[in-house]
Amino acid sequence: MKSLKRLAAGLLALVATASSAQGQAGSVIAIRAGHLFDSKSGKLLDNQIVLVKDDKIAAAGPAESVQILPMRK
Image 1: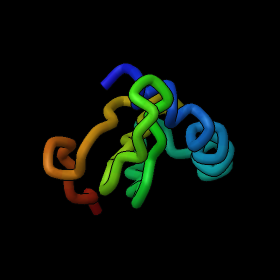
Image 2 (image 1 turned 180 degrees about the vertical axis):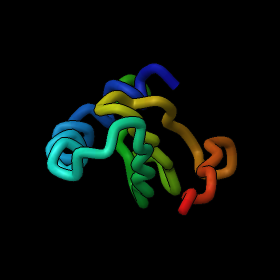
Image 3 (image 1 turned 30 degrees about the horizontal axis):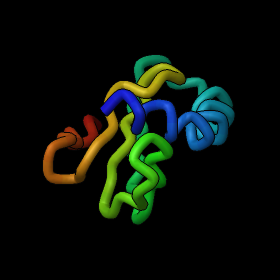
Image 4 (image 1 turned 45 degrees about the horizontal axis):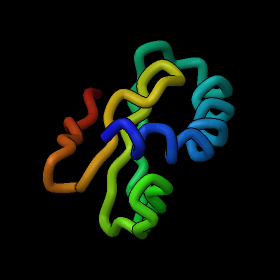
């Protein structure tokens, strides 16, 4: 899990720019990564989710284990 967080850092840079532009404090962004490279294992992981909250990675892992909460209106 920790290695996935590091690997998603590149995605975080893009998301941080977008979330800062939105100006919504406390917002959570879910990124569905069809493929995510794990440099520690040298494997390409399929169907991964990266959750970004307040410009920080809050969770990362397989889609079946990372819960995406519904949006509030």
